[in-house]
Length: 492
Image 1 (cartoon, rainbow, N blue to C red):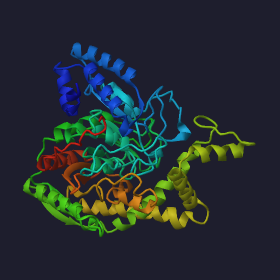
Image 2: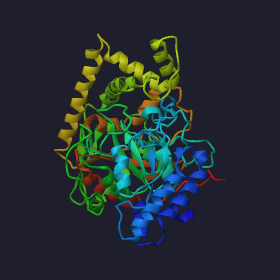
Image 3: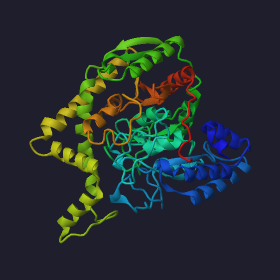
Image 4: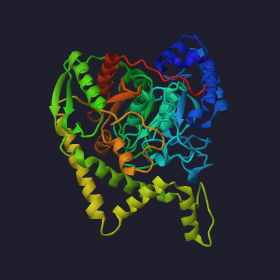
């Protein structure tokens, strides 16, 4: 049965349609694998009974020759997406026990397409982190290991549970979100594929907010084509989300079969950063060579305001977080810690409910929005954001997509950067610019580090041009021939 889980999402979809196996068989196999992989701590809520009911319904549809694009395919859901009647915590104690009375737009779309929910996936608390170490439920563990070392490694963040579950063959795909790199960075360090679509491509309704002008949902899978299939079902206009764009959703799967011959690929010189391991730059050069061999033209481009991206991001994102998280007050839902009066109840609830990283970002955000500092910090950061978007606009006058590394290093050990927030924030150095500009970006596994860990490359595209990313991403995937899998130590 476990062999069933080694298939790609596309293979599972096609096999279900051909009646080579049933959704119930796939779902039982996935649920059993999840039960044996609790050492990875990828799932915070398992829903085997719900999954089997959904699988049975899918099998009935498939038997009648009916069903959606994902009919019967078992999926994992990041615990940031509200799921009706199933606990949704955003990885935080303050929402422990919260069972939404509604379904997020994206998960509703996936269920309409026939997806089967295996459970809710671990994540950094309120998506604030690059390693999944800030989760109230403990860190998710990367299925990969450094050589023969037994050191537990981070799966990246904030979508660490999604990345770990996909890399460990616990599900065929998973939802994730990306505010500053939280899809692409974990994909890079777990040998999976993840795309952050253009801001406005996917509805944010029913997704717990971190930074509303930056957050965007996307899929994580084991191949570029799998990502394309899943993203198509997640996209679409939603009148319930004021930032949702009413634009046609292309056939992303078809785009994966396109060629890159004649495509212009930009290489931004500012992404050559001092202190980055030599193997990261070497992989980048290899990616450039692969695309050149495939017929693409390589173009040197400049993104001069890149060095200001991280500082701007860590002003804008905490500012929006401090506003968004003000709603968690112990009054309406979630945790409540009583006090002698209303003010003390607020203080007690938020002190007990939020972890240290979330508290840190709320304090930073409140500070930069406060009187006397708003102009000096927040307004200035927004101006920098505009300049970064303009850099990309000018770059795309010369090229069709940009190629960069996805992460500045392979996976690191749990606890190795826990006491160094600045070092942790630098994990997003290649990814935050994309969120600030609202552009799409995809991470594709492309190589192995000297310690035997996966490394990824990132492609950045024009707004609403995910098709080009899938074309170029499929070309890199084919050239890289990345077939390495983690040793299955977690069931021993």
